[in-house]
Length: 194
Image (cartoon, rainbow, N blue to C red; front, top):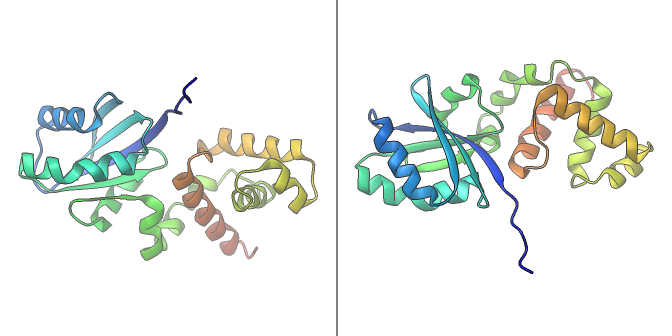
């Protein structure tokens, strides 16, 4: 019996070097995405693309970008974000032409990105932040996290679920987890914690 692939949802902002006709872009994305489900919207000078696929967003975009650039005669910038929010759109300026980047990749060269987005963690208590940081360090393993923090495994699971309900940030995606890790590290540093 063949292994069933997991569907991955990617949130991608796209900006072209020139104004792009939405219908033309939709056709190009349809060509790139193949059978993958997608939805294209517009937000403040950029397009927002929700892509449901078995292939991670960066792979599908990066592999098709050059072909579409030549076909349309445009250059694109793509930014893959943990969720759609207009706060992320201006970070497209940090992406090189004809490339796609995850938000956490930009954070390496622009650490202010994390400090500018700390309000995402505003409603999360320090205990939960420490648990989530340790959970990510432990490879998203509740058992390993529980051992490191000397707490019950169910407590870890409860805090992970509460974190998701409070922030909407999905820890199952590796790029999201990396972004969240550095975001939490910045928050804890600001609070004078480890």
